[in-house]
Amino acid sequence: MDKKEYRKNYYDKNREEILKKKKLYREKNREEILEKKKEYYNNNIEKIKEYYNNNIEKIRDYKKEYYNNNIEKIKEKKKEKISCDICNSIVNKRHIRRHQQSKKCLSCR
Ligand SMILES: [Zn+2]
Image 1 (spheres, helix red, strand yellow):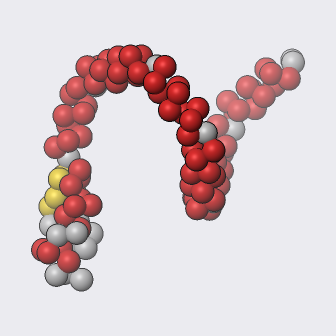
Image 2: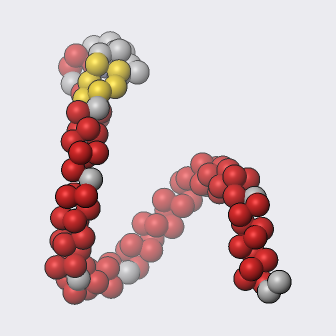
């Protein structure tokens, strides 16, 4: 068995474990990861912009295609309601942040 195969095998066998570890790592290092991302973004902003400009059609197409393929799912998501954990109001999930800035919610704190 070569290395690649071995690794794949290992991964398949320990998938749950690895995913759990990764998640834990991400949770533990959340700030650091965000910071790194920001740094990367700032250091590469020209590159990122260039990529975007060079691929704007592709990106647009991709988004459109994604939207068309997932239109039902997206619609469902848009309608999804959750209860606010501050005031218990039922709020559209998309608007939860806005809701939590509202007088109604602020007055419950
Ligand atoms: Zn609320």
